[in-house]
Length: 221
View 1 (cartoon, rainbow, N blue to C red):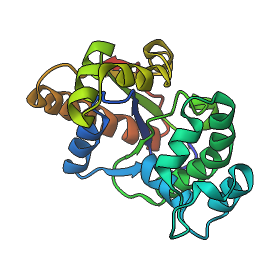
View 2: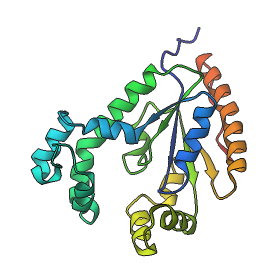
View 3: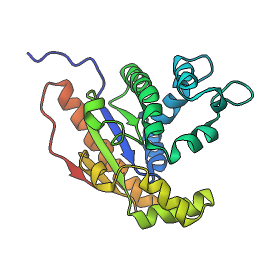
View 4: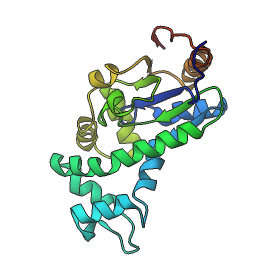
């Protein structure tokens, strides 16, 4: 008899900036699926009084704090945006704690499966850094679509938008770790249809794993 699976089936959602990750995860939530968000975990990891914030101050100095003693995110972004070495030092502090917080949240989740929203999955070590992920769903969008969404959403110019896109992993790097892909260039109704299909698929995969069966091949939407 196969050994019982105690951890929930975990699907990671990842994608580049302005690819539509938030719209996608909201649709999973509407279907009753728990979403563990790396962005929320990252804020928790550097909250006032945390080990993470203390390590950041030790590494970068107290000028990265605001007047209330919290992390000044804008100042931190300016500090690391054009400095790859500084960005790597920051990631070395924050990423391990984010991984631990996400894993704990996923382990505590109920339901047929759980979604872990990890925007920087490819940048943060991919599957090697998150060995407990069962499946990776990449929300993909052409660079032109990302640029247009960024300029409209954030009110920035195309030069800054291109710098933001270039600072992340390439589309090819993200797609190389994908089990499933949604090319998010259509309507919200089309996105709903993709999510409905994937939700049904993930429920089957989760039930199969719980029964000790192997996962089915990758799919694309």
